[in-house]
Image 1 (spheres, helix red, strand yellow):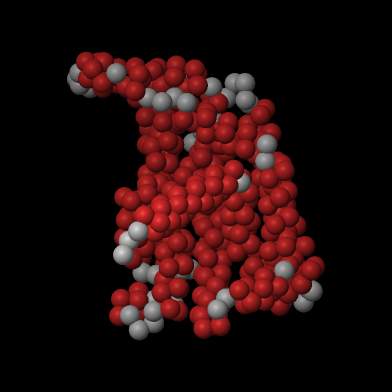
Image 2: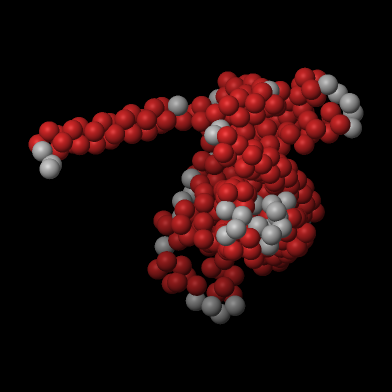
Length: 363
């Protein structure tokens, strides 16, 4: 029989659970920076593990020295990145149109006017169409400078965070065996072998994935930069970097990068004749970008998204598509790593399931 005391205890228990959950969420919100540091450190650790093993197995370094050397490589890469981009952007910060919202708006309006004149010269009544569309009022001119300024601000204020991440990475790499031993004590004996096997496979697959992703971004950046240099586009490094970073977003990123490159190329050539110089140069840049993307889509992406995580290209495409519909851009970015983790766990814990067997036959 349900009494008032039982009901009151149930209500109090429910209130206690809600309060505890709220406090936990509030605590996680307050330490979100620490969680980000841990996530970045974990990704760097996954990238660093193969490098660490290379130093230990091939060069016969001891574990501590191999860890220090791996960390030193990370520091050199980060320092090289800062030395490459920060002085370039800061030196041109006052005049660079990419950082000046008012200049972008002015140049964009001038570009739209040039396009209108070009279309009218080919007997296309564009003035009425453009006037009705009122494109300048609908365009968000703050996107590019906000992105660059946020990037600069993050880098400039990330000194302590960067030191914290590298400190965490050092101990993740150095004491990974100790962490595994400690984890064994927390894992139930009945599932110990399955969980440890899963962690080992996840570490191996995601290490390959993140290293492949970095190599892909480097490949795309270099060839975007070469294309922009060939056609004499100002601020080629900054534009190539922005377009390469967009490749982190599977499938959609390269399309956005092409549109961005076309707009910035036309803005960079505003002083030239639109029909004879600006438009042909933009078309050539787009062709160059598309060639790079065709090579990337048929060479590097299949290796990264398929071979590195042992999944079929169509399978990866569907996973990314579903994640994009459910969670937007962020879902597309994390889809492949998260799907890989779920596949590995599924194979270890549900090996008899027919669907799991079908999806994990290459693992």
